[in-house]
Length: 402
Ligand code: CTP
Image (cartoon, rainbow, N blue to C red; front, side, top):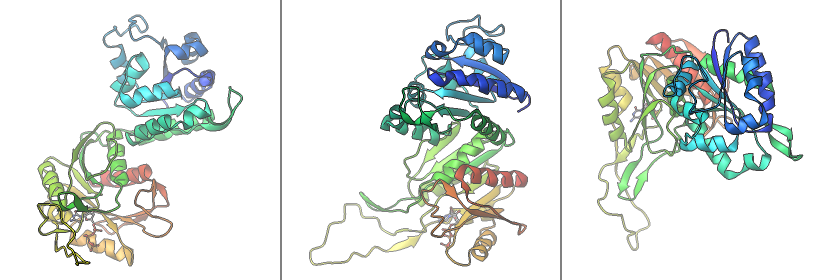
């Protein structure tokens, strides 16, 4: 934490008083701390308290130029956005969470949140009903998919006298999260151009039907998010999934395997690494019908002839020069041997083997158990980890190869 710039955002909530303890711990760990407060936040704690604890002026007003000696009114928010190594919003009220979700920037805290490219941690803290309200939950899901780090609230008695989730977690948990996020956001992939594919592909049967698969895209989106946090220039080619685009990521949407190939080839010239995490369909209908296929009276079956799709990885493997090529494997038997075989046949530098069994369903899950195998034959097995942590393990390995 030494020398790290931690920007703390305080919104309106009774837990605002506990942020004093957070600031004290951060200062003890030699971090530099600046505090921004919303108007509602200042109703609970005075800026003077946080100024004394952080040893810095506290920023409360979007329109004031005299809060910091070296900023004027037009650049104050940009200066703060660039100063921060991490932004921690605690307590994060339902109101601020909703504003962040929709890009409403009507105070200094929300403007800075929109302007910064650095990681943002939110500690939602509010009454249980507000926290569990479907609107707040949906907003948090959107923000999580975009790469905001959400620390779930603690459960217990609340100021209202009710009991349930909504309390600010222990300061120790906030500090651990800040440390972890800062650890993952070291800019070690700066200037590296990384191309990632994610999600399924849909292969048209007729204008309204397709063949697809259960890939949720979570793994590929997690890699895109993690790579962007680490400073890489990330392009994400996504099959048809309903997912938010992670912050600082350029996204290209495609539908079929053929479209994915075209998009990938258009990008690869200027790429340091390609990570093919998409579950590309292996087959596609030979002749997709021009019109919706009708039921044929008296016919119980329908035959659709399929042909192989282009194997994007294999095509890249044949063409590659300096680029690092990463593939995924999902095998149900002789997994290690199968993955090694794929690595060799497709001329890959690294393959990520997903364990597929009853306990690790992979598709749609937030966690994953993987084995990484590189082209030197090194095998690294990992325990069950969040997909974000798996993403960072993959990127750690790629960093050594690029
Ligand atoms: N892949 C690809 N293009 C395809 C099919 C797969 O680029 N048309 C990539 C996937 O993105 C993944 C890797 O190949 O990174 C492994 O895919 P998988 O379907 O497991 O293996 P296949 O090569 O299709 O072999 P098999 O189906 O025989 O296991």
